[in-house]
Length: 587
Ligand SMILES: NC(=O)C1=CN([C@@H]2O[C@H](COP(=O)(O)OP(=O)(O)OC[C@H]3O[C@@H](n4cnc5c(N)ncnc54)[C@H](O)[C@@H]3O)[C@@H](O)[C@H]2O)C=CC1
Ligand SMILES: O=C(O)C(=O)COP(=O)(O)O
Image (cartoon, rainbow, N blue to C red; front, side):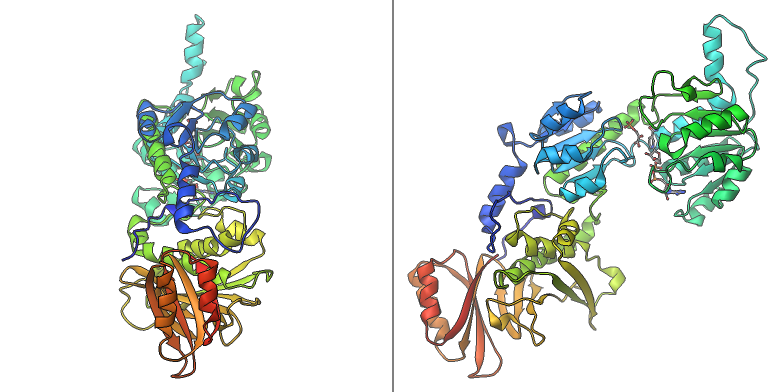
């Protein structure tokens, strides 16, 4: 029977060893080490640092599973010091999670949870290099942000903030604060994602003509709520109001600048509830002073909090709020629970649905792929152990044979696990789903994938997986294919990952425990001879199979063993005269 294998190894990290070994640590030992690593901290629970205010429901949930350290307003130095004792970190937009944080964590930090949408305050490249998963809470504050956008839009149009300040200062200035109407005006929503589409829907309800620009949004989604998808040029040049709902990326940074302001309608009004950096703030100031922009309502700033005498904040025509888009009671409770669930799940090794730097795989796909994920890792692990020490692994080809259409099979998880299996045994680097591609690239290992489309019923997602390593010598010559590559092939048989081919030889051994591969001259009694040597040493044989080219010619015997045989036992097997070569491989 197969041991039930969870997917926790997807996010597991091996303890750092100083001397890379060609041999991996045993699976049982591996799991034990991983658990210690993940559950580091007092009471056997992981430690989660919550570095910004989080809703109580989220904190309560975290406390059920972890030691929770709520420490707010930490300096960079304090954060870097604390982080080396934490398995997870939860932040909002106010904490910069830079490379220094990942470096300081020395591999202990497994998950960064962003309690909100924008992850521009997290160095994703560094997180990925360090194998740290980043998850966010992308849905719970959508409505809050959209409502704040509408609040700013209407408040700006009617000078609510300015009039309020004036009346509180004892003035009664009715003519100064005459506003503009929204009905019939054109609103350009830049970024038609979750928040943008909710703003558009609400603005339609206010009687506005809404257009949107978003190169990645489907036109029918816009049409469904009566919104026209237009080019950037049309959006900015025809709008009376522009509302920003884009992520801050290299492409959107300073998207509104001197040049784009110059192409806008004179008297345009701007709302920004997205990110300060999407606007060139100096250019906005110039546009406000020159009258191109009549008013702006800003919730977000390039530097937060903005400096004390920030000219935009103090500008008469600017309505400003201190990044309050997500700050409703409801959104904060929702975000807190959403992020707490994602972080706790990720620490348990579950794939997070809101992973930002790892493949997101729907649960039903994951369930189906589970045994293949294990198979992929084991094939990688076996293949690399067949390489003669000193040969550099640089070219690996993975073939997935399946009767499913290529679009119907997501192989990203499998690829990551082949890499994990290949590199972990020969490296001190820890590898998981997050950093597998990065590590492979760093080590100069080129992984190519190939799909082999088979005829037949596409019930099983994959028929077999083959891992080939080219340009290397093998410690077991029989593992070489016709073209001289190390080649191992495996299948999932009744839920159990099995090795079915080594080089040119067909075998059949379930991939549990360890495997001894022997090449021998095919003759009667070999299974008995090897079996009795192992039996004498109390090594439990779980499986034996012989694959041969032709009767009486060479054969490869694959023997699955539960325990590692002693050197003496292995020597006795090697001394059997009919055995031409043999190798012991740990899984
Ligand atoms: N002020 C606040 O407290 C809050 C701010 N936000 C911010 O609002 C923004 C939008 O959030 P969501 O709607 O949840 O994100 P989302 O990912 O659902 O939507 C973003 C949209 O922008 C589009 N986009 C990307 N690049 C673009 C480009 N160059 N031109 C036009 N469109 C482009 C994408 O296709 C996507 O549809 C983010 O920056 C987020 O950080 C979100 C919640 C609260
Ligand atoms: O979710 C977002 O992108 C936000 O900007 C909200 O930020 P916050 O969590 O309120 O610091």
